[in-house]
Amino acid sequence: MGVIVGILGVLLSVLIGFMGPGGPVLILLQPFEFLTIGGGIGFTLLIANPGYIVKGIVPGLVGAIKGSGIDAAMYRDLLGLMGSIFDTMRREGVLGIEGDISNPHQSARFNKYPKAAHNHHLMETFTGALRLFVDGVVNAFDLERLLDTEIETHHEEALLVPTAVKTMADAFPAMGIVAAVLGIIITMQFLDGPPTEIGHHVACALVGTMLGIFLSYGFIGPLGTKMDHVAREQTAIMKTVQVGLVSFAGGSPPAVALEFARKTIPSIYRPTAEQLEEIMKEAKKK
Image 1 (cartoon, rainbow, N blue to C red):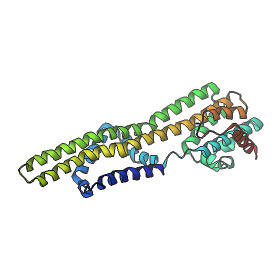
Image 2: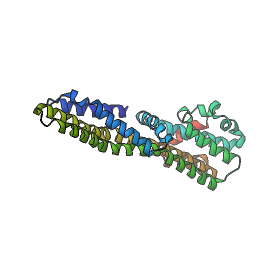
Image 3: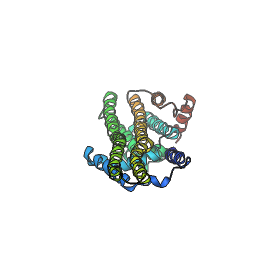
């Protein structure tokens, strides 16, 4: 919601600032300037990036507008789910959660915490690591190294598209200058015409420079930064899974493992110690 409000705010602020002193808004509608800038940027994007990054730009922009979906409620769900899993394993052993991790989508335990359980990549990481530990494939030390590798790889991949978008944003002003120079070249052919005609062509040329800067700093650059924040939020919640799992695998009681996990949560989302106790009490219920 904030992204949409921001986009509308930027657009209206600039338009009102132009139209207020008497600027003719129709002069901004220069289709060939848009073609020069948009087409040039689009094809430079193809030159600079492999296909899978180009394909990921539109979904990435949509994801930036929608947001990561990670909030305090999702972290509480995650802590509750981990608490339930850890408490059951402590009391009943591996058999107590075997059905849950083999089919988490049909698990009543997982469905009790829908905000966390519906995050596909988060649950894939959680159940995959938990399964390795339960099967005795890895110990706590190896589990930490494995999750470090997975989280680092995921984070690097998640930043590829935002980096491409921010690089594209940096190219918009330069392509706007190209469009403006082309407009000036056209204007030079009308130097023997009346001043109003020359002024019109110069104004059209300057629209190219304005568009390049406006699109870069008003929209594309901020969206690239928002995509970067979304990627970092996704990495942060995976860190919470890692710390909780490794602590429990190392022999910590469920409450202690959850406290370790709680400490990794960003302060704006982190539950208090008292809230964690309530989460743990709820998790112990059948």
